[in-house]
Image 1: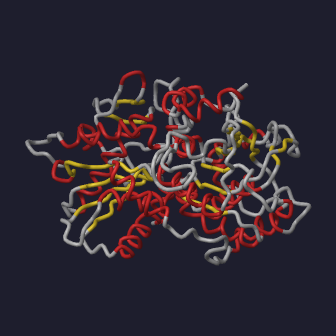
Image 2 (image 1 turned 90 degrees about the vertical axis):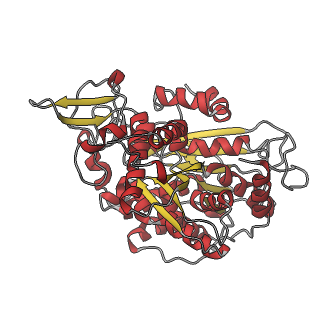
Image 3 (image 1 turned 60 degrees about the horizontal axis):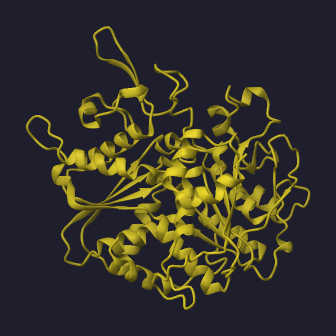
Length: 499
């Protein structure tokens, strides 16, 4: 990002009026009333949160961050590495002191219940909303399970003084529900989501003027986020607020399976396999939306080496089955699908920005950039089908850094920065299936079966998953290596506690 644009952004966000707790009264949907009532009033419930034990002075409490998986660590990394303000005055400007130095963080990866983006396609958004509320309730409460066998949580932790929803799907479907729950509790705990920060960042970077030429903004997100329409709605509202009248087309692509592949979910990738399998839930050959289209195989240009694609040919030599089996190939597939969707509209506006609308995607931002460059030069039947749809100065927007800025401004405005001289600390938790579940609810690997995961109903007292500390047993080896390579601040604070 250019320095001048960074300072404009920081100055604008420093002046931003922070929305107070209970800022917008929202009626809780009936399907989610049960868990809300349990959290607020049912002292016998597993989900009761003792809000009355919140301290009046919250400065020493940790910053809470949650995501559907480990992708939200990209947001945590920006929080840990942020140096955008003078720590004494709070004015924009680097001072070589990390802005959150000395702060404590609690991170929750709801790995057992991911992918969040699929609950919409399985017609179970209500249960997803309950999951999001429970994620927030974990950060608002003071206990955790030390293992998946415990019937009651015996671990003790601190409550969060602010919650960062580091998940686009959770932000889209549950941000206001969390705010309403906290408002009903009477506590002044603020909640920040990634979508608003990403939208403001995009428009700041593009600096669109009233007489700007027509352009397009691409959104790569989970199917759930795309189905919610949250990015398009927020972009349109923010453009109206800024008085932007130029033609801006918004192209949203549901990137089915990409986030899951990044987290090495075996329903979507399995590096040990060499042939297609029946348990695969990612894109397959076909012509429907989200399918691998045979006519676009040259454009996808998949990497077939080292079983990164699982293929089976029919008697005539054509592919009878194709399954993506690496996050790199998911990235290639999603980028082609985004450009193809835009091409089919025949609007012809050049893409100027692509929002990475899922916190998992920045892990493969370089792959996405390389694929976009490749598509610009892709030639088919003597023509370049995508060249005119890709601007020369396309920018990729990772909402994480802007979310970190908003978190700092909110805490400073409320007087809730810790200002410790002790080391920064991260306590990381991950959800795992309960060991008390029947065997038919679990796969051979001990994960929730797809049918059970997406077939659960709201309002139950059952604890089908439990939040336990990060460990070498519940973190995928490849994912941990990726975190070590790409997220050094997060890894340095998490790794020492791994057993």
